[in-house]
Image 1: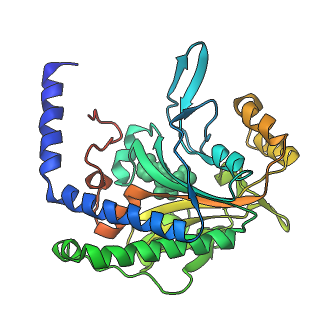
Image 2: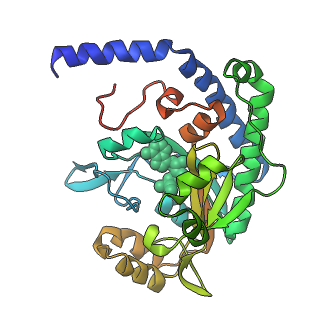
Image 3: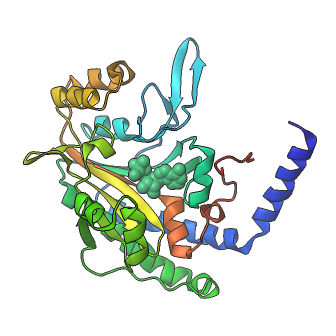
Length: 314
Ligand code: AMP
Ligand code: MG
């Protein structure tokens, strides 16, 4: 690398690490991770180690550059999410979670959103025989607990940031995807996010706007039993999840309906042919959650070494 570029990276990294915003975010990160682990263990979850690379990973529903590498004649992909590993693992362990590092080489333009990193962590969980509503209740309770713990432990930091944050004590509001779209037009998610005061759910997302693996509603073909959690005040999406399709014939149909190459998922579908269980789960992006708690306009302040779309990073 040219030496002036290297010098810039060194300077910007050291400056970033000096920032009080990063320091506060790291203290809050410590509280959030401990709080979520504590609550989930209390609910009977088992923590499993993350998978960093694999023969199969999440196709996602939007284009990203796909980092792959060869080892000993076999091609592997870096993990974009652990969805398939979670579905396989709930056969053995009924309630699992992991802090999963994901690499998603988003297009450089995504820098504008303030909520995309190329490398981030999601707390990814899955529950055997659970419904969407069951895991929505779990999400609400870990978010409530984490925000309460931050208020108790990091009150000085919240005061410094002049950040007041409150989470409803009951269920979060729920909006159907198509109803919200009808009401606000194509930018409905951003629009609703900036209007709402509390986190809320968007439910019943159509298959065409989603990956193949979520489960279809029996009474509404093409609409899935899935959900996104949206932070208020314009902070945008924080969670995606849903009930999963576990029947092999339906999984194969779905891959076809999304015009994807079944070969890409063959290792997973072969395992599915040995039987999967019904399950539901979700992933909550840790950096986005901390960004919302801190009220930061940009996600990079939630990470000491942020990978910013379109930039060279350490
Ligand atoms: P997904 O299932 O693709 O929606 O990812 C699950 C969660 O991970 C999202 O709801 C976000 O909170 C987080 N996430 C996804 N992509 C990114 C990204 N590029 N940067 C930071 N967080 C992300
Ligand atoms: Mg999502």
